[in-house]
Image 1 (cartoon, rainbow, N blue to C red):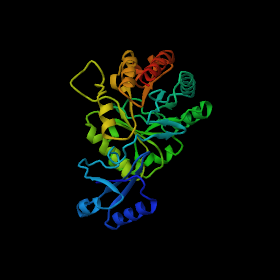
Image 2: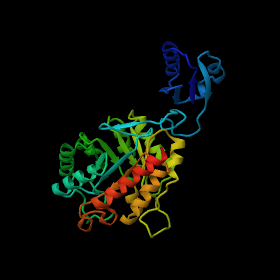
Image 3: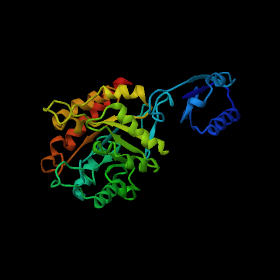
Image 4: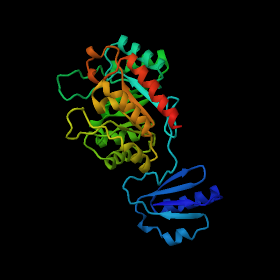
Length: 333
């Protein structure tokens, strides 16, 4: 349930109303917009007398929300959320390009890619230290050493870093990571989501390869219910009957999610297609669809990459893509 307050309602009136709700055992979520203040109520709202509530002088309107996701719901928070990641803003008209290698391999590789993507306009550096792989015999990442290499690249370039967490026991290793990524395979790892909800870190939540948008938003709700509202959603393609591409990029998810939620939405065209030559066109389409950013894999030597070389751009290719993406953004604005 949400209660919209009239303009001119005082802080004392609002606080008194919130205390009344809390005494009924309800969780209260306040969203102060430019023109409206919305009080969201989570819990058993059947005990709330709507007619009584509507009769109060400070109440403009009262609505029940049928969707199970409450904190992530745009009805609770009508204005776009802006997530600050190490000084880089994402959402609410702020667009960010995230770029870097699929996996951290060597110091030379990470440094070379970090410097190149920054020069081409990337705002954040991505890199996998822990790698979930289909085969147990494939490269699994450098783990803690990989994070240290990312942090060194951050000190060298100033780029905030993004890396994927796989295990709840590794949270402490991510204390200096600016944006913690939850990958597609862990989108419904609820114990991990609950633990991340208790951190003060921004979370990049990827859509599972066989999950619908409601399930994605419910996973975001797990994080937000724990108190961490700094969540960024990522469309990275879903598994369909198509076999020519790695996944099927669902760009309709971008405007649909923007209708349903106030959270920022970015797109990962690299994992969606799995083919480097398709990344440019899908990046441009993502920007045109209204995405708040794109995440692109870049490797200085894709042919020798230990992970996902087929979908990685060279620094030179990334430079072209980044410039064209920003032109699309300029045209939209």
